[in-house]
Amino acid sequence: MPGLPPLWPTLLALLVFGGTASAQDKVVYHIDDATTQATKGLRNIRNHLDIAPDTRIVVVAHGNGIDFLLEGAKDAKDSRVDFGSLVGALKARGVSFEVCTITLATRNLKKEQFNFDVTFTPSGVARIGQLQSREHFAYIKP
Image 1 (cartoon, rainbow, N blue to C red):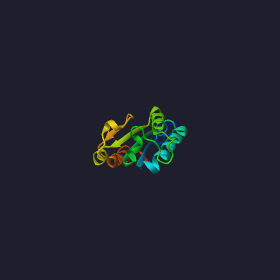
Image 2: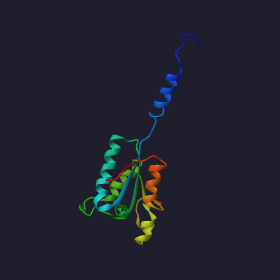
Image 3: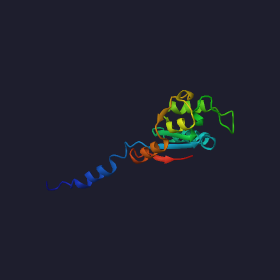
Image 4: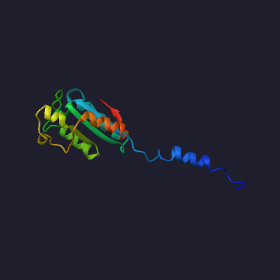
């Protein structure tokens, strides 16, 4: 119709900017050495959620990185740091923790040794790859 502005600039703007307002940040934190990464990583996650509380965070642990999720685990550098309370507080904020079952088999550990509500994944490394490539998670390794 004469006198009406063309619709294509409006449609283009909706396509480009329309979906970003509702997009949720998704991040995978990779822990493969609890001694050097667990305390720092859990604090990073807490700070991350303090600034961006709607972020979906998945922690994937394998190798020696699973040690902080074992029942009664404490920080090797500071025994006052109880991983149970740190992990519990993050789980209450929606963070999920995944443990590699290849690591369990290699280290002769049982699922019952984990006192947290963790999820077990067949391969920690494969899971990280899936989260990045298929689900578009950003990758952080503390």
